[in-house]
Length: 170
Image (cartoon, rainbow, N blue to C red):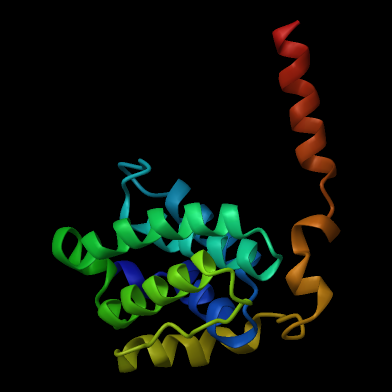
């Protein structure tokens, strides 16, 4: 299977383009990345993860975090088509880098949040999107549930894991 035809990447595209649920974009790609062999911070999926992180921060007004994440995302995304062409096949990576660079400049000028879509160039990915989209319960575009997702989610599992780590250190 081509890397961008993975159902988790397709979900990433749906969340990014349909309702801009950037937090969920990060979650599904992190899951894909964690399942990948040779998982390092240089892996091509990290550029997309950082892009979603940056967009999430920017929309919430954290321009410092957004700028840092987006700068790293651009650096990684610029390398994707040259070093890992399978991770750009089916999307317009040049347009994505250009739009990300424009967004970075907007952040640096402290302009308000504005988004852009990831341009799909593959009819196969379009077909996969059409198949997966009805199975995803998308939150309303622009809702507080989307914009402030990390603040509103159930974090009990994370807190339990943090407590376990603290106890191991004692």
